Length: 274
Image (tube, rainbow, N blue to C red; front, side, top):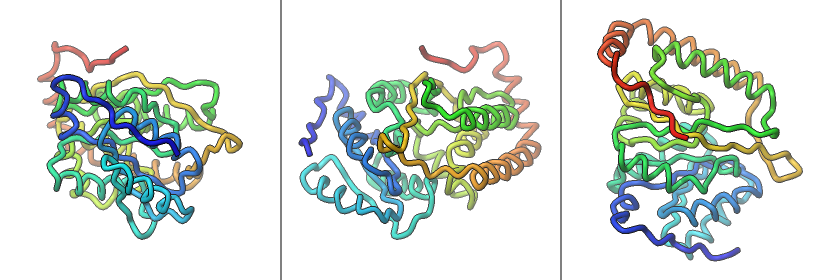
C-alpha cells in the first residue's frame, strides 16, 4: 500500500485540523475502503475509522495502516450496531479529545474525498451550521434509490417547514458535534439507516442552519468492488416509521417552527453553493 502523506496545511489552517476530523463509519466495506482511506488521508488529517462489527478482516488491515500513520485512528464496535451508532461512538471519542466538528463520509468510495478540504473550510467559516452535501447523480444511480430519496426529501421538508435540507439522505456532511450529540442522546433511534435524515431534521429543529453544497455521488457496481448494505424492504420500512415519528414531533414543535420561519421571513433563503 502506498504511504499516506499528511497534507500540508495552508497558513492559518492548523486550527481546523485540531477542531475538525474526518469520521468514516465502516461495516464490511469491500475493496473500495482502500481507495477511500487513501483519498481521505491525502485530503485531511486526522481521519478516524469506526469499524462497526466488521467480519471481513478489514479491521486488521486498518490497524496495520494506523500503526504506521499517526493521523489515522481506528475505533471498534464489537458487533454491528448501525451507521448512527458508529457515528455516535466516534463523536463521543472526538469530543473527549477537544474536536468540535466531524465530516462524516461512507467507506465504500461513493463520496467525493476531493471535496473534504472545501467542506471543512466552509465549516470553519460557519461553525454553527450543518454543511450538507447535495448529491449530483450520474448514470450509476439506481432509479429506485433516487425515487425513494425524493420521497424522503419531501417529508423532511414538511417536518422542518422547508428549513433548507437539500438532501436528507446524502451522508457526506460536516456536523457540529455538540448539537449532534445532544439530539442523539435524546432518542434511542437514529442508530441505523435512519441516521442521516433524522439527524438533519432534528438538528434543524434545534435551530442549526443547513448549508447545501453540490457534491457528486458514485454508485459502484459489484464488479467494480461496490458493496451495498441497503435492503429495499427493510430500510424503506425503517424510513417510513422514522418519518411518521418525525411528523408527530413536528406537530408538537409546530408553534416554535412557525415562529422561527416568521422570524426568518425577509432574510436570505438557505444558501446553496455552486
